[in-house]
Length: 305
Ligand code: PPE
Image (cartoon, helix red, strand yellow):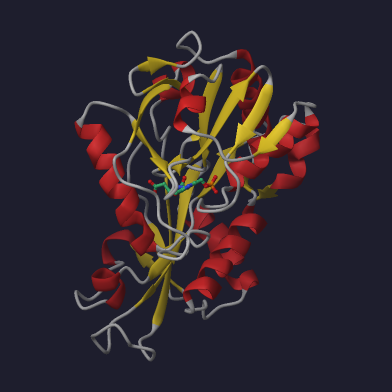
């Protein structure tokens, strides 16, 4: 696995990885005025590759621009084709794809309405975000001292680059304390999400996740909710507290990068017996079958390369 590939799509051209550069006075570098997506492409058993839920990622990418007020200077179709092209050009069978739109250089100062909007799409091989071991046996999480954004402080349904300072603070805090991932509470003290994942808990077979208030509307979250409903679990999108998390039978994170990663411990308390539980394993397995094209029911989520 290497964090590199040959080409990056930049403003409509395929440029060499090493040459996809920006000026130091890029507006987004100073003020966080960018937005991005994280998408995965998987190698299937039949030798083909497919992008998972491309249309939903495209929708969210364009929504981010709409929310920020810096719309993409391309059509959905153009960005979609460029996303598929970058995978092909790099000869990647399985990869992570990072589309990024950002305000470029020109005027300095916050108000720079005439600065260009640049768009880049990169793709590279990226393994398990929280480690293979984490996917298998679960990870150790800690509730961060940093609160998730208030819904009128940041636009949390937009994947705005600037939003991620909050996640970086939380992630660095808990990593330095020896944990794998940071869980963040909302401004009222309820569990919101992790630094780069949504969160689920299970108690007495009931599957619960936080509602779409201050969290990013995760596409993996939506996939797992669909799978859970299809498997006839009782599903609730409701706020829950930190103590409800401590006393859950099972818990797991969802995200494009993290996929479905079980949580075995929160704040030094074992969740259930301290290993991935049966509901988590069932949902995780079905999710893995879906992304790999092994489940007919979810083939509609795949865009073949
Ligand atoms: N919440 C946050 C804050 C978040 O960043 C992500 C994705 C999610 C939830 C899950 O959303 P989805 O990927 O649609 O299921 N985080 C991305 C970035 C990770 C990174 O370190 O960069 C990702 O998983 O691609």
